[in-house]
Image (cartoon, rainbow, N blue to C red; front, side, top):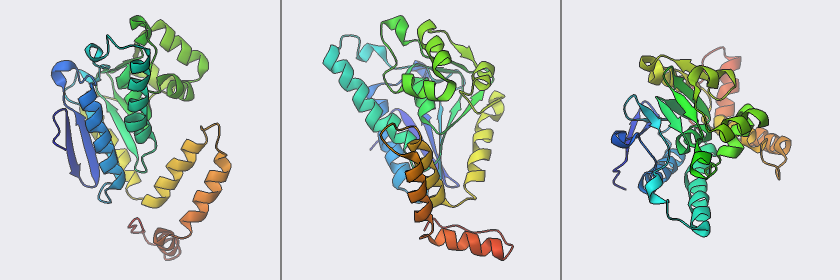
Length: 260
């Protein structure tokens, strides 16, 4: 695929995905979502990728929402299909990616932009970031998992307040309620995300994937998360990384993992 709306780069086992529509405040349109779906598929399948960093071009916006002009005339069926395709191909794919995905939130993360950040496993925000789900101002509700993931992250009461008032919150408020993991100066945003990914890269890749799967299972109503954990724990014993990790521990040296 030739990318028109995102930039991709793999450096030191990190896949950098930059939403590159700065003139539109990096708003998500259909083409951008299709490119993101492809990029996440690459991340999941490429053994050279150990982590993913998603950010927006420029300092004004991570993603300032969806491209409203594309769906302003949709009917009920078209609206439902829009949400279903986006959730399945992009947002759920990010959440279930076996590689850790970090959102580096620079500036506005609104609507679909905040939903994109919430689908990531970790969120780092710059001090100037503003976050919100303003969909009810358009006669809509969040359609890319926003009602579900926001509730999981901040609790029911705060989620309903944020969604129904449609007001933006600051980065510091987002950190206080658990919506983001860290708030840093704009100049340190990417470095902080890299710092975390570089720590994760020292650990066993297959174990990381199993941990993500088990944690995600805790939120699925039709799945026994404890059973998932037991099975993923057992699978780890069949990996070379387990042998390397335990041998290195007993030999009092640092392990070298290969994801096998």
